[in-house]
Length: 430
Image (spheres, rainbow, N blue to C red):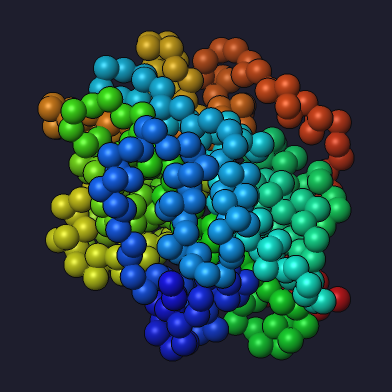
C-alpha cells in the first residue's frame, strides 16, 4: 500500500514513511492509493472473530510489508484489549461506547495503534522522533498515555488554555517523562495552525524529526474504522444501521466512510456538529467554508476548520451529490445538547456526555423523519470528563472511575505559550 498527498506535489510513500512524516512535504494529508475491500467471509463472520483478529484483518492491507505479521498482530491485540459494547438506549437508538480504554475516550484506539507502530519503526534509530500534536480535548490524553515511556519518542502536546475539561487537562499535563504539554493562549484552531506550520518548516525539520499524532496521521486515522466493524458485529437490526458521529475534526467520521467504501453495510451516516459546523454547512449547501471556532459545551468538537474534511471530499471525488446521499449534517445548539443530556438521563436513564448528546439529538431528528430506520451513535467519551456540564443538568456527581483516582493527586505540568509560530518555533529549537 502506498499513500499520496492530497496536495499532489509530493511522491507517494509507504505506511512507515507516512506514519513518521505525519503529513506530506507539500503540506497535504496522506491518502491511500487504493481502498481495500472487505471479503464476504470477513463480513459474514464478524461476530465470530476476536477483536484482535478483526483489527489485524482490517489494518494489514494498509500497513503492507512495513511491519511483520507477528509484530502487527501484537500491535493490534494491544490496541483493542478493552471492550466496545453497543448499548441500547431506546428501541431505535443504541450507543457504541468507545470510552472503556485507559483515558476514557475513543482516541485511545488510534493513539495506541500509532504509538506501537512508531515504537516499532524507531527501533535502532539514533535520532529521537518528536510527536507534535494539537488537541481540543481527548486527543492529548490519549496520545500522552499511548506514547508514555516509548523509547526514542518525545511527545509535545499543544492545547488551548481554559478550553479543555479539568480531567482532560490532568490527563495530558501530569505524566512527565517523555510528555510535554504546551498550554496555548488561544483556541484549538490556533494550536492546529501552529502544528501545521511546524511541519512545513524546513529549518526545524533539520533540527527535529517531527511527526503528528492528530488524525491527520494515517496511523491515527485508519484504525478508527475498527469502531464501525465492532458495532456491526453486535448489531441486531435487520437493516443496515444509521450511524451518528460527533464531528469536530472529522477523522472519526471519515474512517467510518472509508469502512463503508470497503464494503461495510451502513444505511446512512450523520455528521453531528455543534455550532462549529463548517462540515454540516457543506452538506447543506455544497460549499465548504472554514469558520472561526467558537466555544461550546461539547468542546472537543470546537473546530472551525476540520482537517480531515478534505479526505471525505477525496473519498467521494468531490461530488457533493454522492456525498449527501450517504451523509447528512446537523447543527446542534448548546441548549439542545443540555436538554438532551437531561432528558435522556431521566428517561430512559442513560447518561450521555456532551458530544454523545449532540449525536443523539441529530440521530433522533433523522429517525423522526425516517420511521423505518434505526441506528446508533458513537459515544466518544465518558461523561465524567465533563462534570461542569453534566452534573448541574442531572443534579448529582458523576463518579470518577477508580482507575483514574491517581490523577487527582498529581500536579499539573504545562508551559504557557502565546499563539504565534515564532513562540512555538523558539521552544522547539531550544
